[in-house]
Image (cartoon, rainbow, N blue to C red; front, side, top):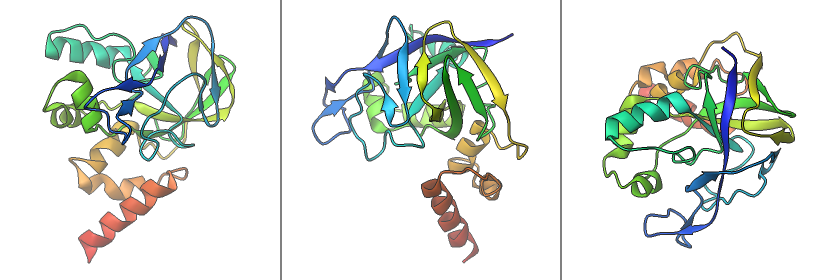
Length: 214
């Protein structure tokens, strides 16, 4: 089955006590929009980002989450979870986001995207959902969604096919990278096999490995 976009979601500035930004504003509350949206190298057109120290940037320009993983959470929590509720820009269907190989490239609409890293849950996310232990539960579930960089700017819209056009041979997936960074540090050496590993993450892995071996 060919993967596709379910929705494209944009966030407006929301003021809330759980917002991680010093101004008290967050862009995590994203909602589906009609029509095509431009994915630029420096961000998603029309999307608000609050805490830029931890969100946005070339290695995490676009965040995507799978509709199937959202359905698991809806059943787990016993409530509806709409597209965009994870703070994702792209909600997908029939795309193995957790099993995506880091560095693989997706053609969506006229844009070309590259899978870079998993999302790390934060207190803003837990506050937005009103689930105090969400970080622990999200980590245990290990279906974090994936950040993407924009290699070729272009427009995407609901219903567009998601085509994997290139997949690196190293085999390190988003799920494996997330588990290595959280509950399974024995997997950390595998991350150094990833040629396009974002440099801040590579330095963090090297520091952690040096600490273990020191």
